[in-house]
Length: 514
Image (cartoon, rainbow, N blue to C red; front, side, top):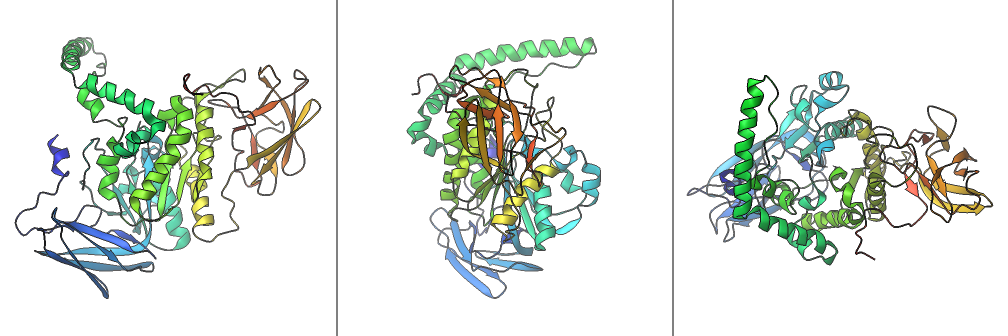
């Protein structure tokens, strides 16, 4: 707990001037916007920040914190030195100006370049002095942290291997295409739940999440009880005995039992990641966020349709930089392929992700074709990043000829025993891959009994769907499974977004909810 408490409040020696790790040598400032620079000094101390031909002064408050805002700067790859003077003086060197993106989510964002199929080749091509990287350590706590241990580094063939693969490839694309410095902030945490990324008070004050928060309050009480501690002590002793037995038998040691503290300081508890990981960087000037998360919330996909956009809105409000771009990766295909069409929590989670496109300045990279049945961490992260970066290029960097969005369902008409579906964002038309037959569609009648459907691409933006087993169809679904067999793409290779035309009750919707 000492390491956590250390950064909860700055511990300043007499005459000490301090800035957080996010503001340091080799950092990248976001171009064309006013960037906050902050730190701590003795209360009442005047602090002056000078960069180039601009100088700003602020007074440290009662808590010692001071903040200035730099005037907007154009992209610049010429290293600059920032001078900060207060009760002491120091310099921040090799400062560049360009594009800054945060890379957040769970393990599929955290998966490093060394985990990608092509890591050897990719790492060898990754010596980019003006592509800068910084990672935020995983600290789970309910106490708001103001700093972390880390530093900006120039990307090279060695340090890129331990950085987020999706984030790194995304940033490298931008760096090479735009020709400007790029800064990447990696704060991903494997296995994390979306609610852990939101300020605890915000969740407590929203009635939509009452059930989740009540459940956590009960769990927290139990985890901090004497009974839980005693139970853990017994489990720990039993585990030690099993480890000794395994060692004597030459077998692998069993996993250790989870302690109450590890769960309380973990990546599932509401507010934990916001307080320990997000808050130390809160306000740092950036262009936007790329996000890959959802697996941990799949069992509560119905709630995610409210929780995910809430998180985005909260981050935007917290940052105070307006509705910055927020682009995410839809869940990939995973687990065994399904013989019969039916329900799927992962399909419902994907739908909740797609619904979040209703928020302004958002985008979704569909990767229903890039997953692996036997690995929740698909190793092709290069193509994931390529689909994400299309959004930034098209929406943020003026490349209007690039279509970022996968084809998506628009409307359905029923004509006798057939349905005709129309789509948008088709980028030249629809086609199939692997085989000529259209695969991935299911259809049902009033009885809601789903059967696999025949389908035919009809024209450039429509698909005809039917089944001889359904005389009067009422609804159609596409790629509605944990790991669907589906093969419709646009002519530029973006896969058709999984969808359903029905509004049947979601399996992940709580029973007591209307």
